[in-house]
Length: 441
Image (cartoon, rainbow, N blue to C red; front, side, top):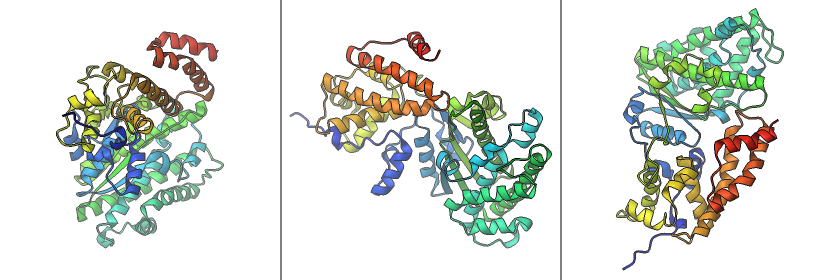
């Protein structure tokens, strides 16, 4: 008797973007599929992340960083007070962080090191959030009252988590104004450096208050910071944004070191694109010296490019969750991967989880009543997939290329991609560079 398998429309494929899937699942009142069927890359040091020994996940866009730290939050939330920050939205869109981009770069390297640009601002916001989490356990100060910073702590105590970021930047602005620095019309030199010192001193007072309180109450809390971001607007803006990413990582790292020294269970986890770490401003910073120790490079490209690649097991688990328990990976290849060459599939999806999900989501939307695809149907999926992938590539390239360069690349892809899909031709990197050079002279 022939087994009738569910169609693509019956499979919970999920979304290419784990954060989009997470919020969609909340609306639908269900668990995201990436949590129900979480599949860690082989050798992923999960135990070290759960213990806090490691706290940074880095890798190219689409490799599963968000899904990994969302999974970590899900595992830890019953034992810890947790808060998940989407950096790009929470810091860049809902705060006055853009005001700090008006601060002069100060070409004097000594002054740059002394001021650290965004470092103390980011650290202050993280301290505010952790202080708020301590009040979830106990609403009183008791012997932890912070003296001169009591006003800010009282505001933190009575704020929602969503209000803390704005409150944090209001407090930073107040400190800078007290030091004679107007962020709209920055006073350079000594006043700026004095403001940096004052901000650091205030941060140290609040951090000491946090440490005392966490020790006495036995607080266990985690912050998860995702989508640490910068974008290319101009050379100067790119330099500012790179400083933001650098200082954000440094702030989280220094706080985690302090918490370890104090033997308190407060942690800050983060995910960052590995391309960002290669920027000269970031790669020359202290954080890069210890990234390998405190972090994990999430990459899937080192495995054999055939059916044994772990990404096929990754997507198989999503199919299996929607089908009876005796469904095997052999069934998956025989039915849903029929007429699809595994090696070519890996090549076209850049060996990334996000693109595996995107392909099968396209299949679900185009052929929801089918469980097997013909060659022409597969090519139709690849065309839609290519269009969706290009939209994401443009976003991925924005930190490193200006709009004219991206438009030139898009023009060339319009010529190349149809032949790649229909005729299975390949374009070398050198050839693409020659084509691209014609548009960027």
